[in-house]
Length: 382
Ligand SMILES: Cc1ncc(COP(=O)(O)O)c(C=O)c1O
Image (tube, rainbow, N blue to C red; front, side, top):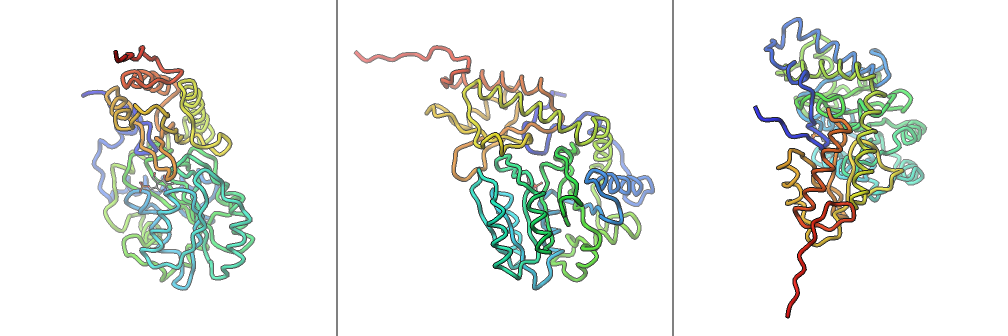
């Protein structure tokens, strides 16, 4: 079997062999061992969020991260409710799109993708729009890698007695989050991000008291958050076919997260990956899209170099041929590409990527100060 490429993406990510191996079993979805696995996963997710069962509940949902976001948005806002979405990137816009599709009354406050939303603007929206019942924000806006100040926003949302939804898809498991301290009512993340499982399900951690108050609000049968939780509570089973192999892999991924020292340990490795990447990229001559103080250590957007010979497709393919997968940009007002520093990768993988970048630039005849450039041929007309 040929060696897999290393994924410098925001997910699916490179996973450990042991996580992949955990899937080499067939367990029935009503098997007591499987039911125990699901129970323990739900408990361990709450632990990761710094909260206890009874105060909060973990609801697992089949599908990708968007399915769990849509499950929360479609299930917890009353028919006469209104959602305020804080937008500074594509994933914030996706929540607006979900609300619009579901015909949920929604107000978006949109900010530049390279800026942190000022609290006073959010406060004005909360003061003026009295009908707002829920506020949603993205923690790590994977569009750029920017980390939004979820704690400060949470305090504000709490002061205005609104319910608070945080999409922590690309940060949960690697950036410390305490749901209770952050006044978070619903947090959403997925299996194949920083917990380093494989794709197939996502989850919401919900404040029990508010979740119980949502009966009758669901606008979907399969994505009904409260019904899914009731199903899991009643007999430990999913209502509809669960991704059994993915859950086995996830259980192993949680064990490996513990072995690494939990969220703090994982944060340390990811931060070291990020620092090695940024140092190396700057030395080559690349520039980050965000100011360093706004940038998290999950994923970084880099601007295309000014050299007219640069094109992303050739750059991507050059790296891909060498065994490294990077990600296209998503920023709306600048040409960028993205490099993730999460998943089962280390600083040594980052150094190998940097070498591959230098060689690829050389192959493309891109002149950057730190690239190993051959002399470009000089053509003279006589
Ligand atoms: C912040 C955020 N929200 C939502 C999603 C959507 O997740 P998925 O692509 O798994 O549906 C992503 C995916 O990267 C994300 O980063």
